[in-house]
Length: 254
Ligand SMILES: NC(=O)c1ccc[n+]([C@@H]2O[C@H](COP(=O)([O-])OP(=O)(O)OC[C@H]3O[C@@H](n4cnc5c(N)ncnc54)[C@H](OP(=O)(O)O)[C@@H]3O)[C@@H](O)[C@H]2O)c1
Image 1: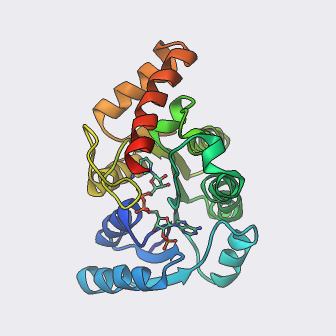
Image 2: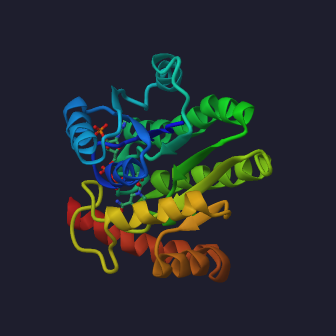
Image 3: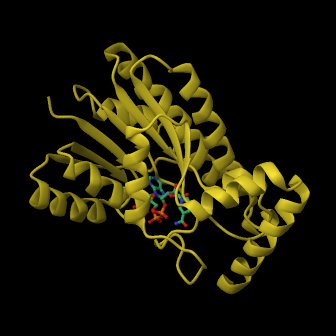
């Protein structure tokens, strides 16, 4: 039977690259993001290249009712692979980022990921088959001054996903967090040393789907960095070093 993959934030960047890889495996797709035109462009391209069915669902996932709305719109469709990828970031101090942006970031990056997982997981468990990939970030591995709410939202995604991965062991449902470092996408323009491409992250996601680890970091250098920052350095030292990096990024963007 043809599988259905649902990817949030699929109109650009990493989400569009994951959509391409899943389509190449013959997976029919459901693409979700706010911008309908960008989703339709991706859908058109994937139908033509891979002959898969692609449904687009324009939706603001930061709205509290969005995950329930999404499930309702997909009545009758079984989702076999769920990729919670949609996310936003804003570099700057928490004070400068401000309450509205912080709330929207947490609603999208953390709350929507947890609720969407909780809404699609029971169906997968009942069928004894399926996979959920939640896109975190290497920022999840240490507190990140000048990017505090983003890193905290991704730490939530990492912790939540690792826990659900244990809860679902032996059920036939695969749950994994994938953490990219810096990736060349509209979210992260400009030069950063060691920056990777969305297609490389998509390859890591495909390998993670086929693997067994509950959490995977994209790229060897990023994995080494996440290890050092979370397991070797004292938290205060790690966060000061990371803070310097994000403070420079904030200064260059403002
Ligand atoms: N780029 C990096 O350096 C990097 C590093 C680590 C982790 N990540 C993570 O990777 C994921 C993908 O990011 P990206 O780099 O590919 O950035 P991107 O190209 O900006 O993609 C973000 C996607 O999320 C969608 N989105 C944003 N707000 C939304 C909302 N309220 N509701 C529904 N969809 C929404 C966007 O589409 P619309 O604007 O049309 O809604 C877009 O398709 C994110 O979770 C990000 O945190 C990125």
